[in-house]
Structures are given as C-alpha cells and as structure tokens.
Length: 303
Image (tube, rainbow, N blue to C red; front, side, top):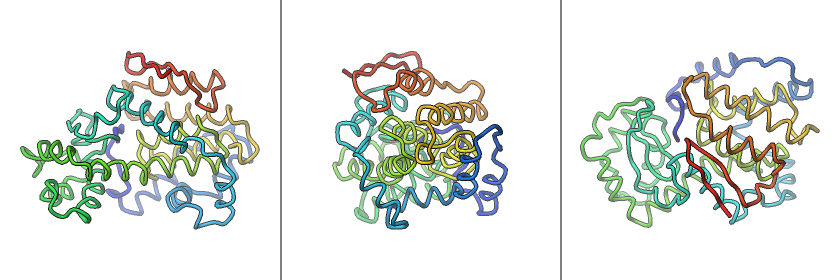
C-alpha cells in the first residue's frame, strides 16, 4: 500500500496504538448520534468487525445477508481494481502489476505487486510469510529474515541486490499471483466492503472505504483507515445510523483528504478530488459506468 508514512500496527507497541486512537482529533460540530456511535465502537472494535466477519455478531450476519452484492459483484470488483490500479500504478490493467517492484521514495521501502505491498508497512512481509507456508521453496523465502528486520522502516538492508529480481521472477508464477490476490482480498477488499455494508453504504461508498484502506492502511494508528472512519462519524451519521449517504461520504472524503495533507502538504489528492468526489457530487452512488476521472494529471475512462 502506498501510504503517507510507515506507521503500522505491527510496528507499534499496544500502548502507543491506544494513545494514537485516544489522541485522534475530536472534530467538533458533529451530530450527537454520530458521536455516540463513535464512542461506542472504537477503531479497534471496527477493525475486528470488518476482518472477522459476521461470525462475531449475529446482527451483522443478518445485515450482510440482506445486502446486495455491491462492490463484491464480479464486474464491480473488477472495476474497483482498475480504478485503484490507475492511482497506484498509473494503468487500468491491474494484472500488469504482479511483477512491479520499486522504491518510490515515500519512506516505505520497496513497493511491489498489484496493491502496492510495502517492505516497510508489514503487508509485504505478511504476503511472503503466507505464501511460503504453502510454497516453502519459493524464490522469496530466503529474504524473510531481512523482511522481518526492515519491517516498519525504509531500509533495504539484506534485500539488495537480489530481492527485486526474485520478486519479478516469482511474479511470473500463477501461484504467487493468486497469493497476491488473496492477500489483497483478505486484508483490504473484503474488510472494507464488509464494513461499508454494515455502515449502510452502497457501491460507491464501499469503493471509497476500499481505496482509503489501500492508501492509509488497515490500521488503528493515527492516520489508519479505522481512525479516519471514526473521525468522520464524529461529524456525520452513517446511513445505518439514519444519516444521509451523500453527506456522510462527503465528510469522510474531507477527513481523508485532510489526513493526506497533514502527513505531506505536497501530497497529490486527485484520487479523492477528481475521481471519488466527482462521482459523489454526481450522485453516482452505484458507481455505474461509464466513468471518467483524472489522477496525477492523466485521464482514465471506463465505458
């Protein structure tokens, strides 16, 4: 994931994570309903609900069973990957990115693969660990000690000069491509869609959550996805709380954009401003095609 920093849940002690959640800005002016809900469900609780699914709460299971497929419908999921690929790898063909690996200078070490897994943000390490359990003789396994050592940093120590070549070679194998897709789905796509449905959001809202989770990380650190959601809920009710969907999503995008700029004032926010915000303003809550958007100065179209 291409993030604005490398703070990760894995790299922080529990006390520090709790402190970040406690010190998150208390955005004023929100409705009492939104504030009450935020107080009742911490970012950590929301993360648990999103990642563990309806087995944790029977009422969640009922909501998810009644919800339409939304972004999880095959055509919409493919569309989501194409949009994310335009922002992560400047292409609509996300399948071209299995073998991508490069240090893009964002302080997160090497960025690689279809969703921008990073050596500095734990998700690349998690991917290689899971893959190695099923394929112990893979070409990346020998880098696991180094990946563990650099996790949470921008360091390449122990990875150069062979890691990038090993990644590209492994990415030619169907098994590693499937592993990348599985990691993407389990860590980012499915939790984001699940929680968005529980919040009463339609297809666009589910994508808004997914893209935010990819960029900010699925963490409870200061600018992780779950803290951003909590901040938004302090200002507006979700549809599940009786709020207006467009209003809530507008607030969420405001909160997310502010977080992007807080970390780096020069951060390009076009993935919010000239894509998601425009679709929201147009009332395209079902994320229907055709779609046109601009990211980093390039225009993309899906008929």
